[in-house]
Image (cartoon, rainbow, N blue to C red; front, side, top):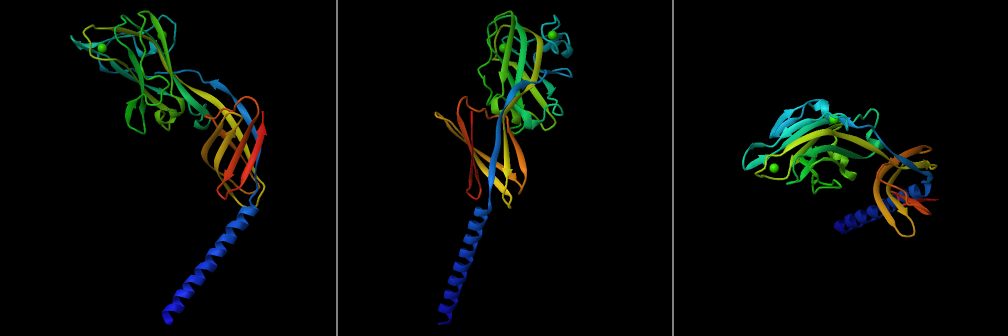
Length: 280
Ligand SMILES: [Ca+2]
Ligand SMILES: [Ca+2]
């Protein structure tokens, strides 16, 4: 009898607690009022190039002539020359340099991606050449996520090779803007190739979409998903944006470009409310 009383008490108190919580959530959901005040495109801009500020580290092969300063400006008739080593039939070249994205001028929040450009001359066309960067998360050199990972086939004359780190760029840029960029050959081979590097540098690309969220409710709202919708595409992103009561928050996404023509932006809050914005 006493046991049944206890069980009934537990059940009743749980139901009361549960309905109280439900009411609390319902009440909060009703009080929430988030609006998308504005959505605008931000034009794509590119920073100046950031070149090596110290001598390259030569891991395989050797430096023949010139200095890192000769690789700071493109098309200026100054270059630094490296040669594969150490001996036949094993000829390799592997060098890396340190580059700094100026994050005081180009804050992370404004960066869409990073580009790396090489202007070089390989004195034969027998093997491909690769650019990689140090991935600070994986703690290794990598080209994972780059738009080009298959290397560049030289023509024997001066060549430009530009790669783009797509939306993985953040893993390759340290918090202070540092990037380690590696240039290396394809494989062991029997022909000793001489390489002239006229230019090697990295730059930041900015642009994307700016969202203005306005909280007209009395509670802080957590925006958890963002949809970009047009007639052909429904694109959903997980976000985590807090907007305080009576405040306006600017949210910049460098990796989102608005579609051309009519589109709708939708945000969903953690409480399950939705705000919609239509634009062209
Ligand atoms: Ca080689
Ligand atoms: Ca040069």
